[in-house]
Picture (tube, rainbow, N blue to C red):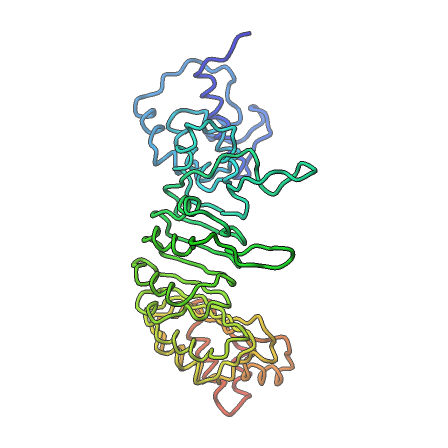
Amino acid sequence: MKTKPSTARRRDAILDVLKAIEQQRYIECRCTARECRYRSEAHKLVWHHDPYPPQLEPSPLLARIGALPELVNKILSHLDSGDLYKCVRVNKTWAREAKRFIWHSADLKHLLSTSIPDERVPKYAALIRHVNWQAFTSKHLEPDFWGYGPGFSTTRPIPSLPRITSLDCESSSLCDRTVEQLSSVFVPTLTQLVVQDDAASRWDEGVLLRSELWGVSWFDVMAQNCPLLTSITLGSGLHIDTATFDHFVTNAKHLKSVSLASDNEHLLIEALGPVLKSVKIAIGSDWEDYAIILAQLSKMHALQNLELTVWDVPLTGSAMLKFKLLTRLESFKVYTKGSYALTRCSATAGQLAEMIEAMPILNEFRMMVPCEFIESRSELLENEWEVGTYFDDRSCRQQYLDYLHELTEEDRANAVAVFYTT
């Protein structure tokens, strides 16, 4: 049986890639070459090419352009995984760039599979940039009586991932880990870390228990191995004490963004004030000293983005005016997951206007909690569904401020008129 020459295989691989690009642009041609009205040479090459073209000699310039990694990388960035596998067959340059995209956010089960030769594992591991760390990743669990199990009983141990930049740890994924396992993902190149709720706990007969090996703390390993961390998200139920977190923040010179779920309010420490650009925090209903948290937030003068989620706590006008000191804010959002009857904002329209005017570059503002001055207007307009107040673009900022100023006047008729005209 006669096989195709290597040049023909390369030609077919390139045509497959070009067809994939055209299909993503929704201009696939189903006409014959004679019926087609498109005059583009690229279109004819993709959809109406001669299956047996004459021998062509590409120019040195064309060969050089087609081998530029920057150009190939730009083309491959628009393709999905299926088309990327086709690109591996084109040539060495395309194969090298395609493998980077294939392994960038690959599932670790592919890397742990014994179908990959041992000598290739370190090479592929070095290409991974984002990791989704699951509860049974790299844990050798035997199948149950029926032959099923939550993990892989035939996979190899997790190798070192020396160049990952983003890590997402799911629930129970950090429990019962050795230092070697933790060090394989908590590497010096890591810049973004998400630790979901109860990541260091496991279920035991229906009870959620904190479970760490004796003398092994995932947070200590992370703090020691990740000096370049810029963003950290901590879910609830992680049991991190203030002293440990303060030591981490002191050494995290590049930290710019912190997201704290409920049960982590105590981690909003003063050491975060001078460095943070973005804060996302949830204040639980059982947190009695929420005013301390609001006061602490108002001292973070470098903040550019602030998102606050509250449960069943009131927001007074005096508390909102404390945020006037955050003159660098570009985005300010307040949400609630509690009861609308208990979570309320008693600030007046004038107080909100005063706060916004003190933030000259604020481009987005959302107060998605029941506001008393909004409820008064809703009653006047017989509009019961409106809960919060907001503006989403800088172009609406002045118009929104004018509206708030109108609401502060005694004549409600003027406020209603402005509302309808805007």
